[in-house]
Length: 158
Image (cartoon, rainbow, N blue to C red; front, top):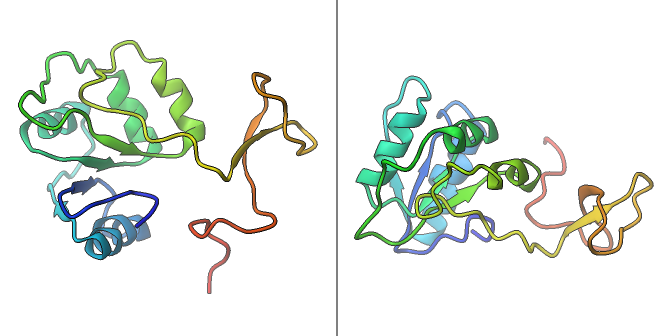
């Protein structure tokens, strides 16, 4: 509910195969809890041009895919695809650590795909010892788990 920030007016398209738990939590449970519409597309193989064409043809508001697929998509020439007359942009859901190189891709259309909100309170930049680095310094993206573990962070298999 909170990670995808879905609303009853959203249409989510999650490209993960139904054999993966990602399909259950993004295509079913999160969407159902929020009353959102689930877009389904039979796609035996990932093809960036099919994804881009589908995103330009249908009013999808939230696009969820594997990090590798997302990076393949932003490397694809998106300039010939349009979302005119539709809500500007699509929320893209993927790990923040993989988003950084994708944002520098010059061929990525800002109208077609928008980056998710990066200012999550439990993300911190740390050094090799786990200490938070001052603003502007390089480090590793980390998730703060103390004093309270984020509710959406996987902890163990049952």
